[in-house]
Image (tube, rainbow, N blue to C red; front, top):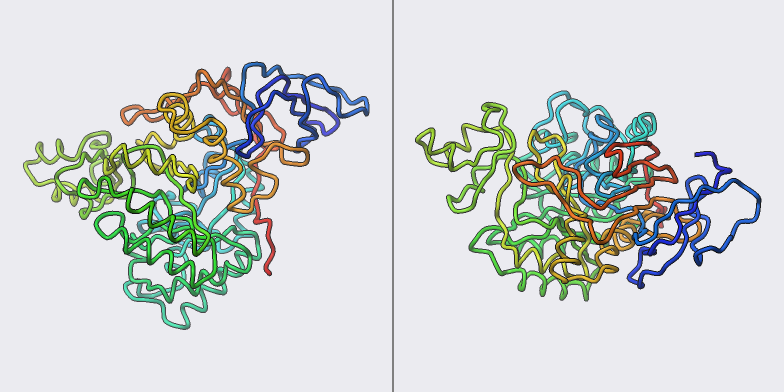
Length: 487
């Protein structure tokens, strides 16, 4: 867009990125910034610049959504149009979650779980090289980056089945500090996965101490979301406390039928911990998770939908129980035969998901796996689903709070300066939606479906998506560096 041109989103119900009530206002944009948010019809700019007006009557005008939990490190380079995210109103994604990041690994054959990011893009040894690649491609959304603990281990350690020794730990700390200086937003871990499982609190806390002076976040896929979830939460809290960083518990859930209902217990514990240390959660609004095929997650009770299999690609889209019956084997044996691959695990109870989504400490993240052959529907529908299910249908969240969980709360916790808010001087990342129609349409059977009611998405002042076109109509995303320097 010509920086001299003014765009005015007129007469909309404006959400400013906080929990304040919506108000009818005009949003004025010039270049990549919001110039003013003012009463309808007011003219805050008097320099005679040409003005383009967009009528947003009966529409909500909100900050672009911030997806705090993604595995989009590679897909922003491979498919920069980013339609699964852009079409649901997301303007900024945070990659590098669950200990899995593209930086600093250099390999042509990434092992699981790094293979969740795809199989060909591992050639960025540091944040500057990755940032240059993002800038060269200019994806349709912004991306901020966590550095994965598993990625650090795989780059530095010879034996992943033990804690790092002092030399290995110091090497990881140096790489991580360089990454923080170059603008990474924090550290993530995934001690749930085998390559990081052997790491102890000493190893993890030493790395957290590196990000703490930068006010970086420590986001973790905890060690156990099943029977041992309370101990795993305490371990994560202790790690963050020892390291001095803000803790985010990733995709908080109580997994497995024997665990259903325990969010009453886990959320009470998290609230207790929040009195001692800064802590938050993220969640996706579905009862199924999705990850690599793992025999230990096959219990013979829950449904398991195969999303992909390298050895039996024709099994994608089928349920593990049906495959096992056809083959005349147990589900565990069928899982073994299908590996490597991925699956959706229907592990959660809806009441537990409702409690976590509604909790005031919770942010929204999609946790989508964009390289899956048949992805979980959260890749395309997580954010509109929150508005449809939790605000409009169930009434568990006021609209302002639902939007806050997707905007200002998230941007603030990750220190994304000028994002997640609508006020003079903020970046013009904006979603225009129809509050009467917004809903997700993606399903497990047909996951790649556009949501309804997301009418326009603006990224850094560029109109990037329209519901009418159902396409990316502009690409103005950029690498978003952490806004806080080391103390």
